[in-house]
Image (cartoon, rainbow, N blue to C red; front, top):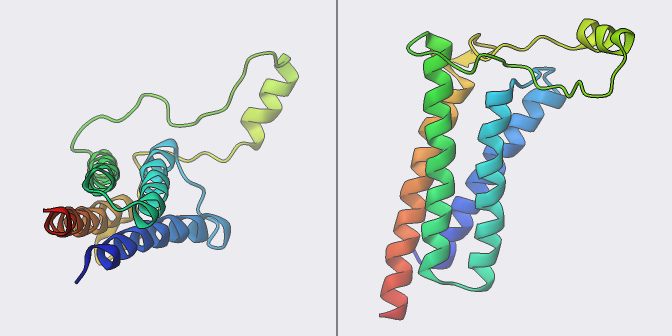
Length: 157
C-alpha cells in the first residue's frame, strides 16, 4: 500500500472515530464528560495533519499523525482506567464557567446542567467502554501512521 493511501486511511480513521463520538452525543443523547472531550482534540489534530500530509507528503506529518493518535489512545486508556476504578481521575468532571454569574444564575446552571461523571461507564460493547474502544482503535491508527512513515521514507530515500 502506498504512503498516500495509508495517510488517507489514518485520516479517515480519526474522522470516523470523531464522527462516531459526535453521533453518540447528538443522536444517541450521550453527553460527554470532560475526559471524553479531551480524547476528541487529538483526533481533530490527526485529521488536520492528515490533510496537510496528503497535500505535502513528508515523514514529519506521519510522525505527527502518529503522535496525535497515540495521545488520544493514551487518554482513552487513562479514562477507561478511571471508569474501572484502577486509578483516580480528575477531582472535578464537569466544566462550566462560573465567573460573573449571580447566585441565582449559578444555581440555575447547576440545576439544569447534565451530570456526566468521568468514572461512570455511559456505554459499552463487548465489555469495553467508549474510551477503551477509542484506545484500541487509536492504537491501530498509530500503526497505520507508522506504516505511512516507513512508506514515506522509502519514497524520499
